[in-house]
Length: 416
Image 1: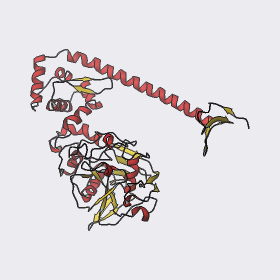
Image 2 (image 1 turned 180 degrees about the horizontal axis):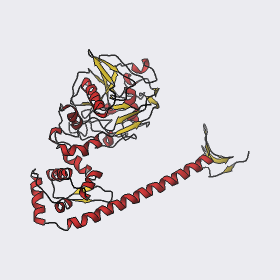
Image 3 (image 1 turned 60 degrees about the horizontal axis):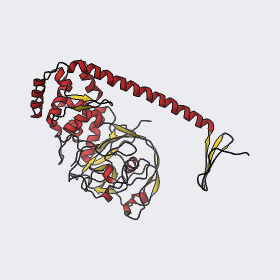
Image 4 (image 1 turned 60 degrees about the vertical axis):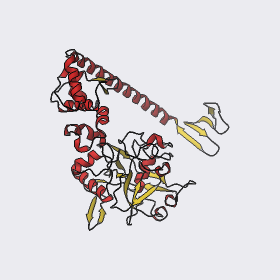
């Protein structure tokens, strides 16, 4: 059979050539084949996708430019004295009325559509601006920008460490969609455990595990604002609306999963009777992830030691950088599944009971340890060493324990 080389051999290990309708990559121990027709179709799809993205980008830029033009005539009517009087009041923590011209001059909109506050505004001042925008009833460009989420970065920075009960209700509707984001984690196989030189007995043996359930996982651990809205309580030691809730027991986490399922209209995953928990595997409601689901999501099919990096400084709040307290969720880099804080900030309760030898005794399909004195937690927290943040490290507490370095995140099974 004739062969036609399509690139020169760059190393002694590989050769690339055309064989019939296929592109062949020949190595010492493996041979990869790519069908030319499929490759052509893929290129066409990529070209079409590029055109769509270009059109979307152009639409976005035109829309932002339109907003700037609509803001310009509003800003022209500014009374400078009133403008600085309002800033002074807001910065002192007092909320006073401001007309459209004053509001429009309190921020600028960048090329990406994000709003940046007037430099003389303090955090109290920014909070005043955001609250007045949230309370507006007019259907104009200012309300449109608020609805777009242009002020979301400013909002999070202004209120993240404010106790949740002190965050005005009018701001909840902009915060909750951000906090309740979910990431799709597809069913499939992954390698669970660790066998490195530092591996603990509870991390071994490494084995391939099959997850049969597709799930949605919360992008962030449950925050104090979410917990307070659902329960009217905030047990956390480190107060802050957008900090992860801490000092919650495993049973508290189970209860919140059921409450959130009720609010969202899903079937409860858990039924509790006489200190026994029954998990309805067919339910679509919120629940704690299993160990296998948590570890698969943290690794995101990558080989990083931590959730998103081999350097914990990039993705985690832990003993070396936390200043002995939790931090705003999402303030470090995410992993490949766009999940934040899987390493560090707070340990996260999972469903499984603890067994040191679980990896040698449970099934390799949807493994779960159902019974035991302790419940597993994963990911490490703000007081943990770097080694304790490893994706495969397993912690455990009695399910009634409440710790300032212990929280949780929720998942739900995708209905088939």
